[in-house]
Image (cartoon, rainbow, N blue to C red; front, side, top):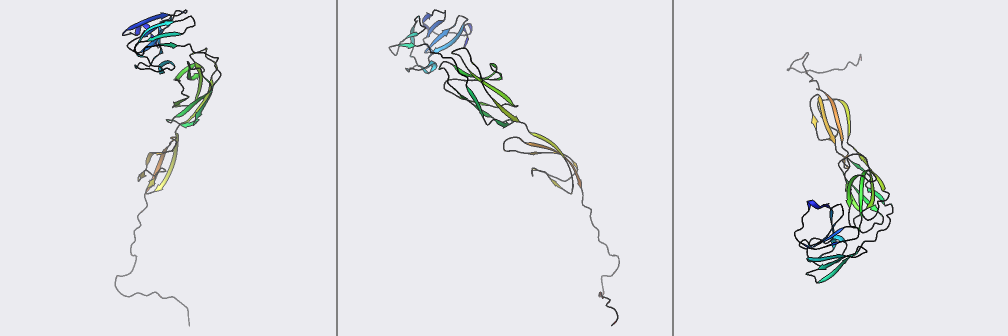
Amino acid sequence: MVQGHRLSFPLLAGVAVDGAGNVYVADYVNHRIRKITTSGVVSTLAGSGTSGYADGTGTSAHFNYPFGVAVDGAGNVYVADDVNHRIRKIGQATCTTPTTPSLSASPDSICNGNSSTLTVSGSKNAASTWKVYSGGCGTGLVDSITGTGTTLSVSPTSTTNYYVREEGCVTAGSCGTTVVTVTAASYNTITVTVCDTYTSPSGRHTWFGTGIYKDTIPNAAGCDSILTINLTVIATPIVTVSTLAGSTSGLYRWYRDIGSV
């Protein structure tokens, strides 16, 4: 929906006004019936924008160059569908008081950077949409679930409460709620003293000298563990062998003293 002064119609083939002052326009070239409210908001009442013939609700219906439009006292709109050689009726949707929907998340606990799928359960008027919020019921709009859809993918970066309610056909009702818990990566510091070399906990690094190093231990869910390693490497001393006495020639034997016979 847009304000009227921001929209242009290539060719208007019919105009009608209902008892509330709303204006209906046969948008001939665009194959749509447009509605202009008293505040100047323009929306598509019916028509997909592609020529053809199909009955349906809203934009699922198809017209083929709608030429004339009229409206009765009950708000029903009648269209002369030129190329289809038919008179079409756009009936007023029957709206019932919305019930409070239920909202679930799967999974309801994720690691930072992953996604969760919100699923709405409940009855909804055909002319309405599900509105999903994160700042409260009716505050902080996340997205709309239109048509017959019931799911929405979200990727919060921190633990978030979500709210959903029906809007569009009647006064919005109460919200169904759910929460998605987000776990961030963990950060830890360890101190290690070794001889010669050290292989990191992840197995991806080998260090030979003293220093401060970083290592990441990946987690399949995305909650990586980030390690800071204060490493001290002690070199193994070299052992030197020298001859204290003896010669490289001659024959030497060792005898055991077994005492007197």
